[in-house]
Amino acid sequence: MISEYDLHSHSTASDGALSPAELVRQAAACGVKNLALTDHDTTAGLAEARATAEENGITLISGIELSVTWQQRCIHILGLNIDPDYAPLQEGIEGLRRMRIARAVEMGARLQKKGIENAYQGALQLAGEGMITRTHFARFLVDHGYADSFQNAFDRFLGAGKPGFVATRWTDLEEAIGWINGAGGTAVVAHPLRYKLSGAWLRRLLDAFKQGGGVGIEIVCGSSSSNDIRCAADAARRFDLLGSVGSDYHSPEKPWTQLGRLPPLPNSITPIWSVWPRHGH
Ligand code: AMP
Ligand code: MN
Ligand code: MN
Ligand code: MN
Image (tube, rainbow, N blue to C red; front, side):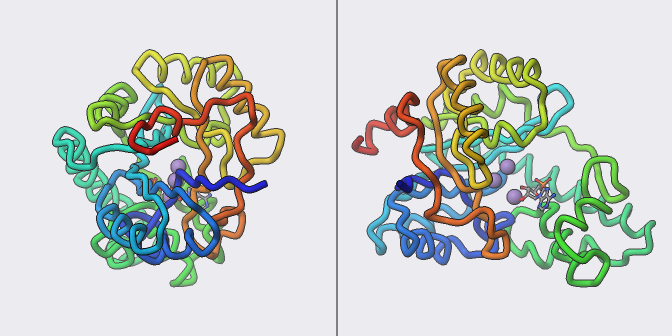
């Protein structure tokens, strides 16, 4: 069985390879019936995605993936079924855009000290109008022969503690959840097992997330093993969280995150979409 939902994906509005329209067409062709576009810290791709979804007979759920700083860690919080026009959310996004540009300039300066010229300009060009991310730097480093793969670019230059890494204070957890709830959406902890938290720290995170008004956790991710799904489902039951399903699709080059391949949620889990009244489930 394959889930008809994919509630985590990226387009060229952030670090995805496909335009919003291409992404939606690809998802439709792969059998996805309900797709959330969740670009990093931006809603700029949603209008195009929505128009294309209508043409292709699939449901587009407006989303965003916010970078959050919690206890010195970077955590990703999905806002699903949001009203992208909610002013405090858009003001927050504007602040994040400025932070991302300042961070990218600093990354370029640090990489230059390692003898890598023009990394900021190169990454900016790859990002185009979209939100600039480390993925664009990785692409630049691979294209110019400084790294032989994305993984290698992160391992050598872009990962935490590496020469091109700039520690960043993102949005606070409570503030991000506040923007999402204010926009009428539901907040979901993205890929909970990817932060390499101990059991105790994961419980602390989920406690703080619930206290702040968060309601969901991603249980089925593009890279989940059946053991990962069991582990995330246990956490959902323990914290009484709703479950989400999302591939985190970025590009055809990342074969472990494909559209239209996700297993369904375990039966014991209440789906996040059950609380979306307009969604008709
Ligand atoms: P940023 O939000 O600018 O820090 O960029 C983070 C993005 O980089 C993530 O959303 C991933 O898409 C990508 N990324 C992080 N780590 C890796 C990795 N080891 N290999 C490939 N892509 C990565
Ligand atoms: Mn990404
Ligand atoms: Mn993420
Ligand atoms: Mn993502």
